Every structure is written in C-alpha cells, then in structure tokens.
Length: 410
Image (tube, rainbow, N blue to C red; front, side, top):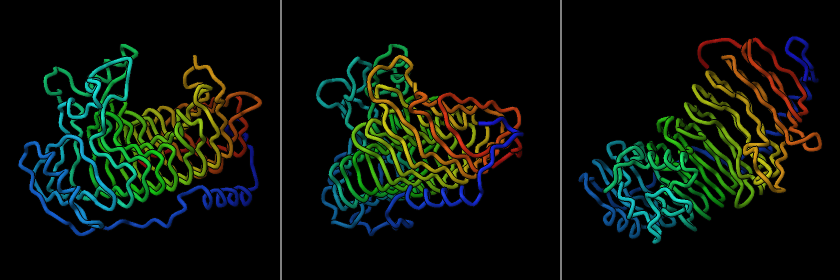
C-alpha cells in the first residue's frame, strides 16, 4: 500500500463493478420492508409492581398473529418467553423493567448474580426458542436495569461485570433478549437500554429484522453488546441507533456460519464498533454495511479474532460510511488474544471499503495472520483526516486512500 499523496489507482469502473457485485450478493436475501404492528389480543396497564405471571399468561394465551399490548405504566418482570406467532407491543407510554432479583433468572445452580469461574448461569430476560413469526414492537422502553443494585446485594449487574474483569472470571448476568433456533423474528421501534449483559443475541436463526430500534446504554457498562447475530443468516439491521459499552453490532460464528446480513441506514454512538468476531470459527460471509454514521467510539469497522477461534471472513462490503471521533475507525486484528493457541486460523479476504469518510485523525490498522494468509481488501474512494496513522502487516490492499477528509459532523 503506497503512502498518501502517491495514490495507487485502480480502474474506477472495475472497482465500482466489484462493489456492485458484492452488494448484490452480500446482503440479506429476503425482501425486507418496514414492519407493521399486528392487532392486539389484550391491552394491559402497568402497576409498577411485579407482573411476571400476568405478562406470561397473556403471552401464552394470545392468539397466533396477535400481540400483547403494554399500553401504559411500568411493568416489572422476571424472565418471559414469547411463543411462536405472538408478539409483545410495548407502547410509547409503557416501560417494561427487568427484575433485579437474580434468583428469578437462575438456571438451578445458584450462579446467577455471582462472579465465578463458571458462567452461563442465568436465563435471559426475554427469550424466543424454536419460535416462528414472533416479535417485539412499539416505541416504549425495555429497561434491563443493569446499573441498579440487585435484590439483597450492594452491587449492580454492571458492578459484577467489572469485578469479573478484575478477577479474570465470569459475570453471571442475564442477556436481555435472546433468540435461539428461530425464524422470521422482528424487533420494531422499541427502545432498549441498560442491559445487564448483551442486549440482543440472535443465535442459529434464519430471518431476523431489527428496524428502527434504539439501544442506549452507557459506554462504561462492560459486556453490553448491542445486537449479536451468531450463527444466523438472512439478518437485517436497519434505521437503528445503537450506543453501548461494548460492540454496537457483533457478528459471530461460534455455533454455525453467519451469512447474508445487511446493516443499513443506521447511526452508532459510543461502543466498540460494527464488529465481526471474535468467535468466527464457522465463518462469516456475505455482509453489507450501507449508509452508516458512527461517532464518539473506540472502534469503527472492526474484524477481530485469533488462532483459538478464527475462521474465514469473506465477501464483506462497507459502503457510504462516515466516522468522527473514532480512535480506530478501521481495525483488523488477527491476534485478538496474543496468547491464544490452536489451529482455528483467522483468514480475511474479499473485503471492500467503498465511499468511506473519516473526519478526525485516527489509527488505521490492517493486521493479517501471516504472509500465507494475509488480510486482503480493496479500497475505493476512502478519505481520512490528515495526520492519521496507517499500519499494515501481512496485508494485501489494493485501491487508494486520500488524507483530505474534513468537517465537523457526518
């Protein structure tokens, strides 16, 4: 890769053709449009107290194709399961709060709400398992209460996460919304905040849409990823606003391949970026990120893994991305854990950066695994701020970039 000012030029028409072909293939294969809220089977008003049994009864008895409508007030609840064909509508006047009683989430081993060498001790707050055609709708709030002290303890969920980091152990905190082995699931317009752990995990699911969703959690809240598709395919994240304490979006593949994913017309704030990894041993492919604005964060477009959990990442296209006040706007890591061992070697190729603008000086890192498995990418119309640092190792990058980006906002 030549230094700025001595640009390595490709045929523009050829690059545009490649980008167009990537965009066609590297996306959700469904025809996705803005969802509509189904008719309600029941309308409820929150009392401010614990309403777990009322909510679960309503969800379990709701007719197929209908939603349970939380019309107004505050609902406090323990874990909830949404069955197939049923939705939860949290209206603009309603707040659904996750209980801070760790015992309600425990899987039976008294781990939930502890820091321990053993993890996965909690059930999620809202769960969909083997579910088809369900969703969460509305402009109301789902509050995970991650910063509120737990019942009977002097610590919050987030305090446990920080303690776990110090002890090099695990936090046993519940995921806020977990979708497993499901199909055609929708999150629409809802405001999600203060997750005790990851906010939305979509595992081994075919067909997931997050449209107009807001995730708003402080940047100090550790391990609070925004949306994590894991081993899933045909995923669309569109018109969303995500600020959090960890990855804004993290595409993983520890339990199966992740592919045909679209992230479109969204705004990210504080967080660790539009990420791929770190667990990718089954491979991530066919991702397009289009019209993304990202400001005030640690990392931007981030691919991360190591030899203990690596795999193939390919056919990834970033188009029309603007970033400002990002420490590492493009950050490629092949040694995420430098002490890792194993034979799951990360390989990144077929990565395209098209119409990228970075308005503030930053560090750009392209670190492939080896000369035999280098990071391979194409740049077209990439503009970065003067004074930036450009670092490459085991990387084969074609195209050009310019140190001429300026402006105060995207």
